[in-house]
Image (cartoon, rainbow, N blue to C red; front, side):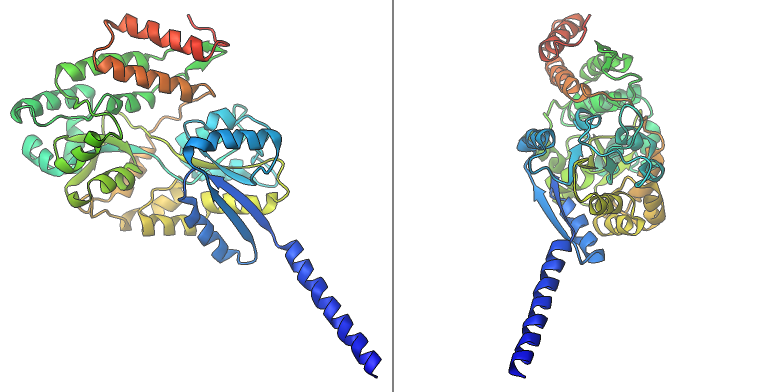
Length: 419
């Protein structure tokens, strides 16, 4: 009996061990890489709905991220199952075979992205129109403005009335000239030339490169003329983005308008000027625009595609989750269904109670779906750096600017035809 009992106990123990091993082996697990830690919120909520899985979220600093990701995807060595891409360089990766195509079975991402704004869909698709990356963030822009300055110099701080006053760049610069004079040179309309450049970049009709040849869109030519006009009217404060002076100006209240995307509210204004809650408004400028954005893609060589897709789909299309994100963090999403569902209830105390979701919902429909190429991010950086130099008077003429611009493009991209 003792031998029989011992045999039974050993058999039972063996089954338990096997069951434990089986559970360990079958537990689904994915690794996610990102250059921003905000994805941790989505992981937390995802795990609440999927308690039996494991997610390894790895935050990698932006300065290292692109190089490390390219190496991992190219070699397949320790490549993540899911990875974030920034709008500035998403086109460098979008056509690479290491990105899983999410159009058609079993994902049907091409149908799901129809719930995203058109300008976002343009980024989510590769050059052949296949969905390769999924957005969760809406980055529609607007003109944030100081209500106290608007009341003093425009006679109103009402967002709709202010919007009607800045429908064109001529309107903006007329206000800039008047505000500068009436304030004795203390107040400017815009922080710097990038306020103009980012709006102009949203209305180009062609990317920087077409059939391997550099193309300069008319909107880019116009940007130089607008910078000239802004300088002539003393509309620019000439404070470099992210500089101490630029950050301090938001608290000091010596600039009227700050054009910026949706995330500008939390990560720029509220961060740099926490004591100015209630002194800000949001208006439409001369043209609708967007700025930045984070997207998530799947590694085509992943052995965990089913779970990887469940996470990507959750982050981009789960309306309940996205509405929770919007309400809890006042986070404007890429999903128009989610945004429209909560728009009426989301207001910002920082914007004096303004319903900014309704504002962005309207603006989002107006943002152009601009075609981009893998060259655009880097060429845009060249252009923007030189535009800053142009605004500071370091070029003798527009012709000199364009000569230098073309020279720099040739140096960085010798494979392109640059006339």
